[in-house]
Length: 442
Image (tube, rainbow, N blue to C red; front, side, top):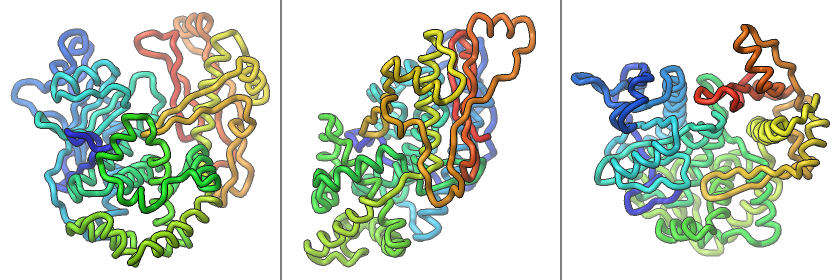
């Protein structure tokens, strides 16, 4: 998402004193049965909305799920502070907007943004917004794997965090590049694994460089919010998002971290009010256009040999296989291992389209690469994916439900570091015959 007239998906932060740890929001069956989402989530008279450590929460999710996402946001807040503020000594420049709106259903998300804030949320999984009627981070979870929701709130949560330090003055390539850098991170408990890269994005950036279809540095570095947003609206923004992520990854890790100190200097210059292009040129000693072109050449060489992170790649592979297994299962197929699942998905000519901020990737069962996890330097043994037989259902009701709508076998990795991950199936609360899944740490 780019900046719009009401500062949609800008950034934002709240470095005030820590507030009480997350408590359960008002969310009961009787509240959910009547009234608008806004009415149902209003605190009782004389009470305030609950707080997590850093955020004020308004939610119609069940208490445990609300706390799970609140804890996740708090963990990422700590990581933003650690990676950006602690190293750069940044000072806040804009107000804090620590409001978070968590929606169970997409329609409530769309209706509430429209009626309460005059914002059109069509096509978005979440956003950080600033409007004359209020500001905050909003997202919905209906039918989405937890990892997809987490990516949205990590990306938009960065925008929310950063707004306090840069307002609307961070250049869009850096704004979105850092948001995707943190969006691709993996949270394991209270630890955050940064620097991850999805195979699809790494591959598309590499192809763009090799085929000379990337965006020249001078163009991307000087692209303003209006041009960025125009490309978003006309559907041509995919490469600017992916390349911006790649450029941030290069500035953080390129040439064994050589550019890290300069990256910190650039952030400090931006925070002090230096114009974006000038901050980049001063921090990285790019005095002339030939200097920029030489720097661009170094990034291009980095992009050609970049490798995806096995951890985030494994989660993406499991999502693809889970979607395929659900489709095969619904048509009566009962594969017993990944090879049988591959055959069944190919018989159905299965394809899975996944969208992220500004770009879409399509995974095809015809491609062997989508059934394997790429190697990286962290994993000393090949990472494999296997089926896990479900435990027998307990109780008469559960057994009847299994007979009516059997649960697919679980999927999990082997030899993945730092932890193996797997597909956990669960039944929809509104329709127990409908099967959903999350990607969880094993």
